[in-house]
Length: 78
Image (spheres, rainbow, N blue to C red):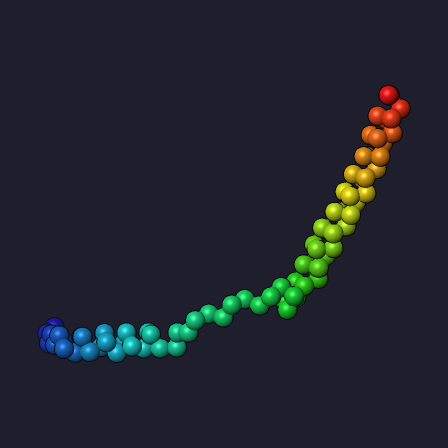
């Protein structure tokens, strides 16, 4: 069996510095994600907003009807 000569420390350090410099190359800050309106999910976001608006309208109508019924009931009992 042959003996392998030891690797000089300067060669090891040089290789590590080169490897480290290559590892740092090409790294950039990630781009922020696009707005939902600019993606394929825009229809889902629009549907969610429409459902919220419709629910608020329905709640307002029901609230108004409830208030009117309560006023009629109060007026009839007095």
